[in-house]
Length: 105
Image (tube, rainbow, N blue to C red; front, side):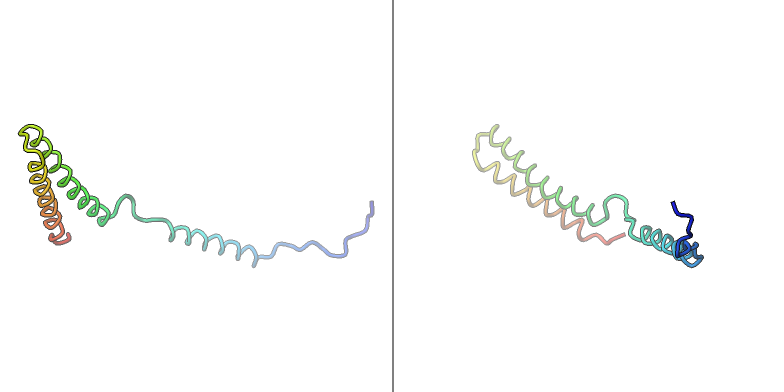
């Protein structure tokens, strides 16, 4: 091989490049911290929405189940189901109106 020196000398580390790399690393860490989700679990709005849905479905399905059972025991074919379904809907909406009219904490 040749014992000749290369035409260019290798570039030495520059302090400015090191400082720039440190600043970029710090900026990336700050950005990751800023973008990390802060809320753990469900928010209050999600909890309230789930509660409203459960009241509505519970009233309708509960009324229908009780009305069907009354119809089977009493033999009053559609009337027990219709009356109890209507009462279940009324109770479900009453509960929804009650929790929606509360003041937030």
